Image (cartoon, rainbow, N blue to C red):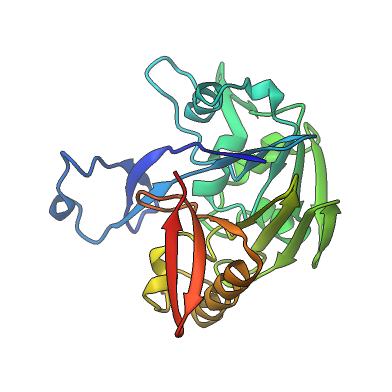
Length: 257
C-alpha cells in the first residue's frame, strides 16, 4: 500500500466557521483574534485493487479554477478519474468540501465514477442542514449522482477495510482500519487529527463529546502501537503520517518520510 498526503495548506476559522487561508510564514495570528488555526490533509491510498481517497478537504480552487484536490492527486501521479473509492470519516465542511466542484454555476460530484462510503446516520443528518458545520448543498449535489454505500455500526466494508463508530468529534463520526497488501493503516479523522493530541492529553471544546474523544485517542493510540498501524493525521501541522509507540504510559510518534 502506498500513502500520499494531499495537503491543502493552513487556515484560520472564526466564529462564523469560515475557513480563511493562513500562511504561517507571512500572516500574523494576532490579526485574527478568536480564531482556530488548522491544517488540512486529505489522503490517498494506492492498493493492489483501488485508489482510495480518505476525506476530501475544503474544495478550494487554485488560480486556474482547478480544484486543489484534483491537482494534488495529479501531483501524486494519478488522474482524479483513477479514484475508485471515497471513504469519509464524517461530513463537516473541512472534510467534505472537495466532494463537489463548481462548474458553470452548478455543483457537480468531484469523483462521479467512484463509490462513496459514508456512515448512514451522518449522511442523513448532514442532509437536514441542521448544523452550520455541514453544507447541505454539497450532499444534495451528490445525491443520486454517485454510487453511495451507507454503512451503520461497525463492520468490514471490504476485505481488509473495517470501520467502527466513534461518536466523539461528531455524533456519527467513524474511524477506519486498513490491513491491505501487507500494510496496516489507521485513519481516525477528527478523533485523532494530529500527533500532538496523543502526546499532550486534553479535552477539546469543539468536539461533540470531548471526554469520549480524549478517551478514544488513547485507545486508538495503544492499538496502533501494539499492532503496528501507521496513523494518518488529517489536521497535522507538519508530519501527517507516523508510527506510534507506547511505553511507561507515554506516546511517541515517529514521522514517516
